[in-house]
Amino acid sequence: MSAIQIKDVPDEVREALAAEAKRSGKSLQAYLLALLEKEARFARNRAIVEQTPLPGAKLTVEEIVAAVREARGDGTPESGSEVA
Image 1 (cartoon, one colour):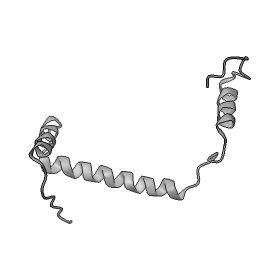
Image 2 (spheres, rainbow, N blue to C red):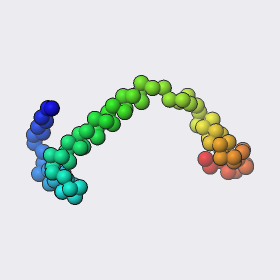
Image 3 (cartoon, rainbow, N blue to C red):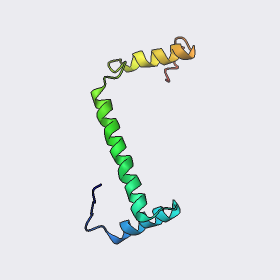
Image 4 (tube, rainbow, N blue to C red):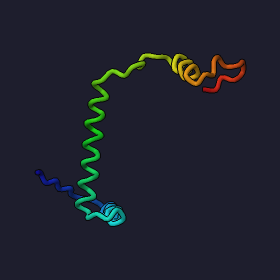
């Protein structure tokens, strides 16, 4: 395991983090480690999403709206009711 040190943390930031840690029943160390782990998971998820083409990514807004309406059974919109 590695150690991370953060310098020049403003007092108000440290106090806010310590208060959140206390509210969640954790030490500041455990609270900050959980935050770092969560960010690392999000970073991995972003990397996976960026590498994976999404189905329908090249659809137009009109095609998406039509597909949603069809799935809902709404059919075609009446004239004047263009709200998605």
